[in-house]
Length: 432
Ligand SMILES: NC(=O)N[C@@H](CC(=O)O)C(=O)O
Ligand SMILES: [Zn+2]
Ligand SMILES: [Zn+2]
Image (tube, rainbow, N blue to C red; front, side, top):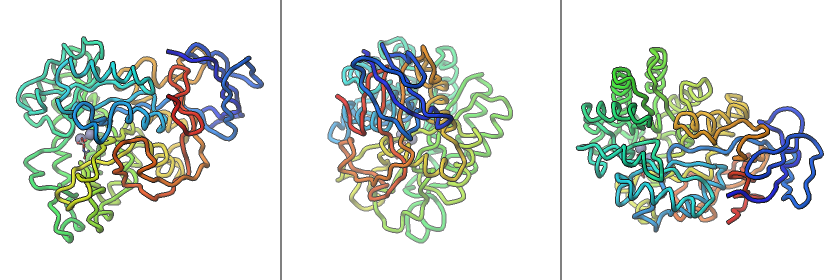
């Protein structure tokens, strides 16, 4: 569906050059120039703002079906649009699990009905995420929801033979396997990064090797299967080294980093506040620095939010009992601006790459991550690079409030989002 005409007036395309007008008509970019006019077009005053291709999130948890008390496809779509996203991938760890075409098609259809963002269903790799038997990937891929990515996220496909088979099938089907890299034998009882902080606080440690051993293994499995593999939420400096090695070998491996792993470290655990519990855990400052550098040089390909809503009763409890996961969609851009743009690790063109172009390319969305040019689909995000705002959980569109960024002030904000030419956000407000 496309709306009427829209003029974005005086934006800096990719944050570069002179202020420019962009006229959007019939879902496409119709004209780019200065002093553009159109009869009854919606005019967006974009003076001083940066126009980017709409963001694509390869890693979102929307909790529908099953935990609509924490997020629905509708509330999560609103959060995504406010975060500047025009496409998100909804992970399969719902209840019931998205391991059949009935569920994956429902997720796609419901997302289209809401109409704020394209909600692409992720299919489970194994039945019930149990790691025992492959799910019917081909059937899900052929459904209305056209599943392009499969993941048991929340769980690791840890059986190497099953992972090998999944990779073989995925290349035959032309789909992507995304791995939650966690060797489960090394994370029994683990709730925090294994290091001095967890030791002092008496929290069960999750070693870096639990992640890195699976990243190394899967790189080799992908090499031998001639398949592609994507690493969810890379969190350690060692993973960065392995990615470098694997890419250097010509292995088709890609990876994402979350905004929280770009900003926070395990010093946050001092308060024992369950809001900081997440899988993989917040690591050390040296890992944070390595991840930032890897995102800037392309070793890590993109940003994935791992937006993971949880109810108050599941977060505000003893640290080791708190569910892992944190909200991410509405704060992602602000954190990327602070951790990457401000220190000069990425310019805005680089932000377009890691938040839109690369994820669209990796997962195969032909209409997303496109250049801002005449004739291209008008999936666009407008960012105010000098807008101070303070995060308040209850003000976020998500049903749940579990943001670790509560009360933090950031310096950049998404002000408008267009999905196929229709404004889904204007002036920072959702347009239903
Ligand atoms: N990241 C998390 O800590 N939790 C995720 C699952 C996951 O991404 O592993 C969730 O579904 O809550
Ligand atoms: Zn995960
Ligand atoms: Zn996840």
